[in-house]
Image (cartoon, rainbow, N blue to C red; front, side):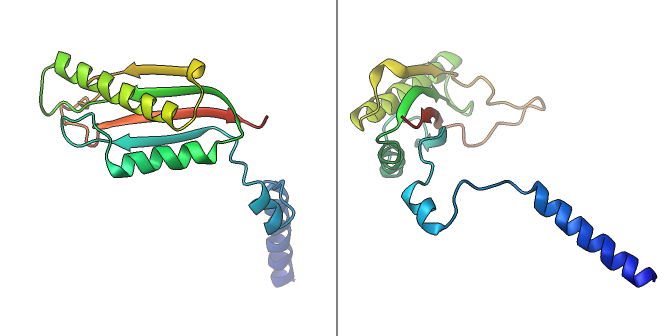
Length: 152
């Protein structure tokens, strides 16, 4: 009897877990391939060489891939935030570098076909590049991009 109770409990738990699983809008693989829900918010990062604001080949590819994926979508807003690390340079130098990085990425996104009026470009310099314990935050040589997109 105890064995049957345990099996019944396990089966009920499995059914409850299955009922809580998210429901996919796709009925089969063909639906997914036809509509991969690419018209949704996209977030990605573009990294730079130390003290540089020039796009690397990998950065150009990331921008191109994301712009291509969003073709045909309603682009509602593009936020570009340039960052810098605190390892070298003054606060003013890092802010200037962050601004240059953000502008470089924004220009590349425009060239890739994203609409101009929806851009918000900002820079944080080295703000936030040092943790509370004084440790330098790694990989701050980047620009963060958030593209708010939706289906038309």
